[in-house]
Image (cartoon, rainbow, N blue to C red; front, side):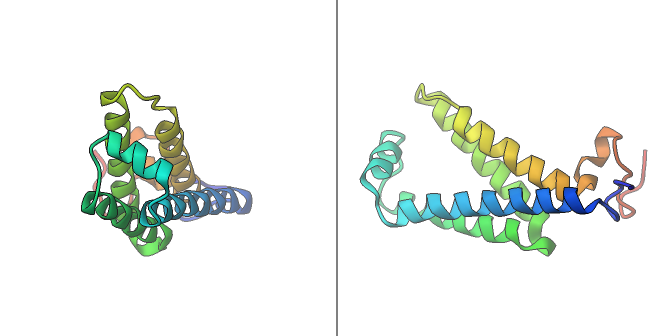
Length: 137
């Protein structure tokens, strides 16, 4: 069973798909809570200075990132956007003295799902072959 990105095992593909779907559902639920103005969410985001149109904008970013991550042909862009989004969440949590475990675990699940489904994403670590479109060093 090769893991060069072109051939992965059925179990690995299923596990990756499950994690990718889980991440998308969590992003959609988070966006939904913001769109619905769930009081606890509005309060927590307000403490970070995200209110009004900014709250809606964050929800829209979550939805857009989730859609891009869900669709295989745009998954790499989605991975980049969700990673940046979670990096911002971690920074915001740190700035306000909040625990970073929740966005940290989410980020780990995001990358684990992407790696299980597409092992070539970590080609620069030398664990898998470099994509054919990028010359090897």
